[in-house]
Amino acid sequence: MNTYLKSLCVALLSCVCTISCGEREIAAATDDKTSIQESKVATHATSCRVKDVPTDISNAICSADADVIRNALLELNAESRAIVAAAFAKLWMEQEEVGSSIPWESLRTQTAKMAYAPFLAQSVRNGRTDFPLTSLREFARDVALVENGTLADAEAIRVLGLADSAEDVPLLLDKIRHQPLPSEAGKAAILALGNICDPSATKALHQLGAGATEEEQKATIAKAVATRSELARDWCRSQ
Image: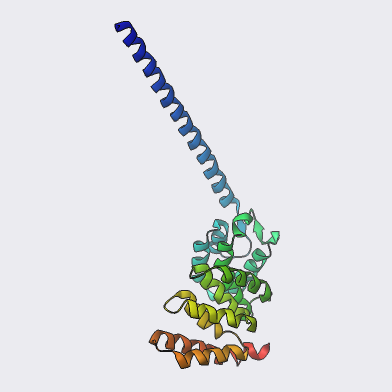
């Protein structure tokens, strides 16, 4: 009986050791795979460079991180805006000449493109680049039609306003109705109307103003109307 128990214990210990050793081997293999992947990412990030732009912008693009790109653009000084706009235009069109080891696959995502699309659209409006607004508008409209209340939705709406198409007025009004203030998308839609030159956008703003009851809504509409008045003197006149 004792011999049987001893044999059983030996067998159990052997089984436990086999399982434990196997788990350690799997864990080690996983760690090695993770290390290799991290090494590849680090190597790629180190070799990635965007030509002719400030280092922080180059690093942001190479990170392919939407928040990093967005923050870098917010901190961009006025003197560098034209150069950076030209780089992002090339990035949007996936022109290889923009730099080396660019993480194209990650930068093709909706999240990454929406992080800089408003900046690129505003750069066109400010005369810093002649990039076609139609390309930005088509992309932004597709995003706005499927997103509701997200950051991507608000950014897409801003682009639609800057793209200056009367065809988008109904969509913007729909956003305002379904996403009222204080939502970012609703606010962006009101301000977007102020960026559109067509009389239908002006009419929509006046109708919204007539029915406004909340102070925040009134203030946002007033800001959009003021923007529209400024546009009448420059952008709209040039179109």
